Length: 312
Image 1 (cartoon, rainbow, N blue to C red):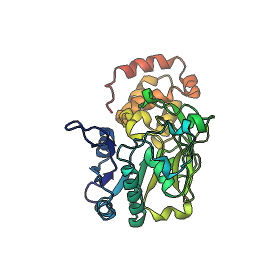
Image 2 (cartoon, rainbow, N blue to C red):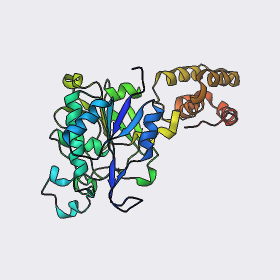
Image 3 (cartoon, rainbow, N blue to C red):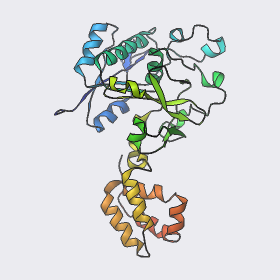
Image 4 (spheres, rainbow, N blue to C red):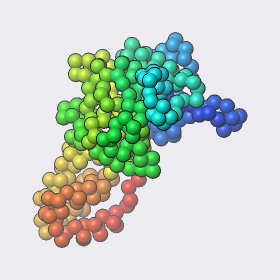
């Protein structure tokens, strides 16, 4: 593609806008920032349920991102929720307009074979769109769940997700597990028929979905995640997968180090540029490497402290 890809983003709806106090389009700036950082151009989807207009918006863009936000209307998946559970659900203030709009967008994505990234609420709605279910409140309906609603840790890695070897997400990350943030109270227990769970948290909740291998050719790209990757962009190289090719090269270099470790460290940092600092800091947490370096670690840390700080 000779031009930056245009990415259609589904916005949320706020009950009171800043200017006149009426309904307002809402979108966290971090979604746009992440797309811009990746070389794309973000475009906010129109607030309409007109199928033809949404189809045209999907047609004119190169990919679609479904974002997080308010809960999905329970009437779409379980009209018999216990009152104690239904009280935890906070639906969109436009009387389900966002749900309808995004379901139409999902339909058009598959009809037109466009790339799709679904995040948090988008992950849940994608599952519902194909006949899957939704856990309306993890605390009441999934008692074995880990704490998935850590709002004060939205930019931190709070639990691990086990990835399926050979899956798209595992290939992207270059590893079999991934640290993620977690700010949701609902979740997907099992994927709908077209999808396969390629990432689960320790309690079994589906954190990543992809198309089944037999259906993968239907779209050029589909990845659905429960966590918020756009809120981890600021971590920069600190979110570099531990088993990526570059990390393995640094690991091998570190494990070969002799008493002339200072010279070796300088070479590694020069060779791997801006991410070397965080890569080495991460590797120093590995017991085998800490044991190998032993007393060298303190002096290596002093050396790293004199390097320029990374920027996200």
